[in-house]
Image (cartoon, rainbow, N blue to C red):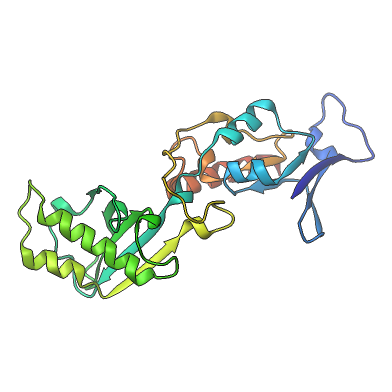
Amino acid sequence: RRIPRRQGDDTCAATDDCSLHYTISVELESGETLEARNVVLAAPPRLVSKHVEFDPPLSNDKQRAMDRSQTWMAGVTKVALMYNEPRFWPLSVSNGGLRPAPNRPAFQFYDGSPEDDSGVSAITFFTLAGLSSAASNDDKMLAKHCAEQLASHLSSYGQTYVPDALVDKLKAFDQYYVKRWPLEKYISEDDNPQGINPHPEPVPALARSEWDGQLLFAGTECDLRSPGVMEGAVGAAMRVFEELKKAW
């Protein structure tokens, strides 16, 4: 809720590491207060900007970058379909884009099958769940709509012949898993998004620390190589880890 930075009783000389003379307090909504020398924020910058008060304020560049940032995954619901047999579809049609429409909620699909011969296969979809007529808690119907959408897409695939029997098998998934990111309070503020945020570009101001290196930012949007995706989360965490090693 609020993160103030307070100076200790001693003063900071020009040649000192001034971070040693300050303590950061983290005031939670519960009323509890935590104190630390360093604080790492891993939530999306846009949510941090809206819900956390900083005292003293962040630099103008940092605040402006946080206000303008978008959380790409905030509007995405991920759906994974699993089959109890090795991959049975051609590699040439394992990944691609889809055209979303009513009851056709997916806009991307990826082969999620393991590399080893484990006897299972999987397809992962990135979806805009609001396009499905399934209720917000009807994950099975959402998965069914994804399977039907991909089957329809492959049956009209112009570059590679996909047998009808294979298309029908895609509809008969054995298990499904759904992750509704819009329902996660630390990811999104819109539980029924009508669109997907654009994929973020690297923004140096989001990656820079504040308060003489005491306040660090490790959300995926703060990565300078792969912002917005899992690789960006790992990259931002590794950067902050190296910064903390130097500070301690």
